[in-house]
Length: 170
Image (cartoon, rainbow, N blue to C red; front, top):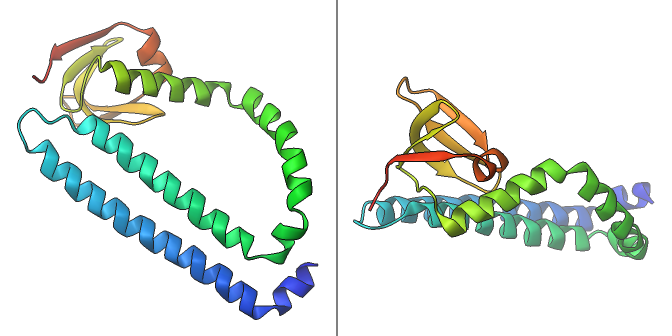
């Protein structure tokens, strides 16, 4: 089956073009959204935290649709699609148990983004570490301490711990 796929150059070219366009579109969308965030964060009373989350979410959606579309061009994906879907349930169960910590960080990140105990550019203290919040994403929060070290804190710890927001942005 793989030999047949390798001999079908037209399908491989379509696959490569779609993957390339996906990467290119994602790059330009990410660049555009980054500039938009920069402009919005310079406006008074604008919180860039939600914009950064949206940027990551939009990039993930672009990758999901682009690479999913590319896979649909391959005949092997169509042939084994039913088998893959049947095994998806079992794989999801296994992946759920294996990624409990990652899922916990994602849920913690969502709670941080919804309830906003702090925002980007706030100065916070957590478990003896303090610094300015650089980024809040679904997995972790990145702060910059006074010596310019980047401290990466998993969101699970932040959502279960005590955070001191020293300089809260208005």
